[in-house]
Image (cartoon, rainbow, N blue to C red; front, top):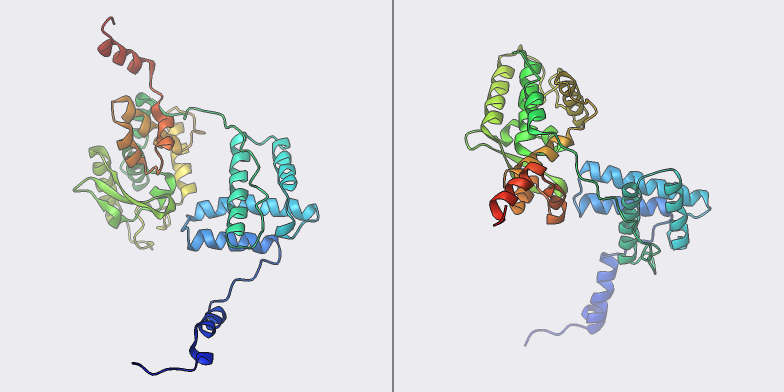
Length: 326
């Protein structure tokens, strides 16, 4: 039998008291601004959200803080559902879309739900708010003929033209997001297998496919970059700007706009439309929805189902092939 210890020093009640001293319960946020700051810290460290998602949450929640402070409310515990309804009403009054209102409400809901879960609030003021019904808009996309014109726009053998061909082919061939393309490093490519390692939303890693045209364009670009005069390069970046640094998302947007104008297309078309085109053309050619979901990196199938619109010609082809009286 082991030695006995005085219960006053090593007993269960003393152990619990010691744990309480070591693991201190976080203090309640002093004001709304601190509450939002802590919530954003949670999203960054625990949820591992991307920089772009954090910026969106921060913008929406700081607007809410400014609105509430203007009404004299700085204590998170003093916020009511009427305050939040007034905030949403102001957003609608400014002419914002339903999608914008829904996004801002989702940010507020997530923040107050977290504050309740952490024990900082006794009740959730956003719990009873209804999300506005969003418009069901079909994603715009380029036709196959328009995509061919765009991909052929960067003519010439100069490094900017070669880079832009590789960039456009990569965006269309893989369907990756602009932010994912900007973050690509050369080591992420496996041109022999025709895949690229991509870090998507929520820092989820996936393999994106690269078709034959994209592989050839990337090989040409990497070779041309190696022949270019020596310059200061940022280590690892695949797509570079003229100074040798990483091409930013804004830089990719400018490239796409310039090449759209060259192709005689609307330069206001966003690079994200190439992702829409990628998904639409795959489905139009008979690809199954689950496969397209994996290729796009969507967590939920519902996000992919928006692409199930097809051309009238495709519908007619299916009808003629499947209906016994067609």
